[in-house]
Image (tube, rainbow, N blue to C red; front, side, top):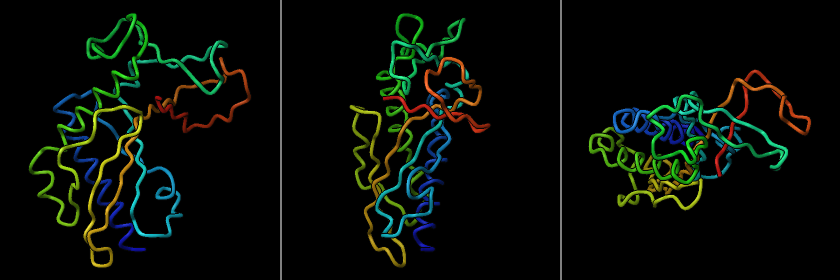
Length: 194
């Protein structure tokens, strides 16, 4: 159990370093990694072979607003760019108004891939290796997989699939616009683009 926590902590540390590198590549795509799923809940009971990570984009969230519409399923929102349009959003908006999710995926995962190819990054981690140094595949969906190898005292050459998902954290939310009852808290709402 201790080594499992150590491997997850090391993966989060790696992703924090990747985000720091991304600040130089594309500051708008810098993220805060947050565990999700069984690793976050502490219910992972087998070997550390899968880790789910949400990548919160705080800079991007400051430039958009989320809107609910009667035309959409109540669990969906559309992401509208705030006026005036910030030039950092060039290439990921459509109709000068809405965030284009597919272009966002391409921009984020391209920057992530560049950051992962930084040589000093992998020299820092003695027990963690990149399984597929060709990089992550270009986005065809909202979830991308980072294939790593953990080599520890108990788990030798353990393949770890890290699911990386973009998420937007909205803490300025009210119940207006929701057609169904929703539970709101001070923690806000996470939007996961699909």
